[in-house]
Image 1 (cartoon, one colour):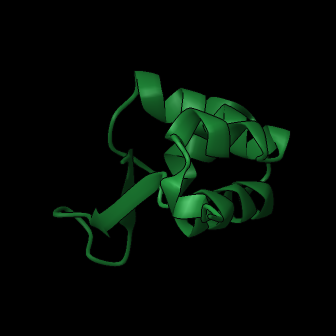
Image 2: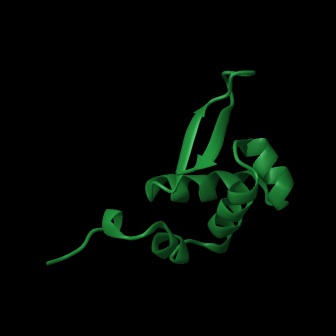
Length: 80
């Protein structure tokens, strides 16, 4: 039988991620509920790199996002 990526444990899926995605995940582990701008400030990564990392994490269902209550234009990211 073959296994799909959804059968993997989150840690296993994270091991295959680029370093920027690992850093974003680690920051979200310690600071639950951050916007993209806050993640860029915390990680010292460029906005574009943070967007790429979040996209990769969302593809693996490791990150959830919701609209910010204070500003509906922004999204708040948390670990799944």
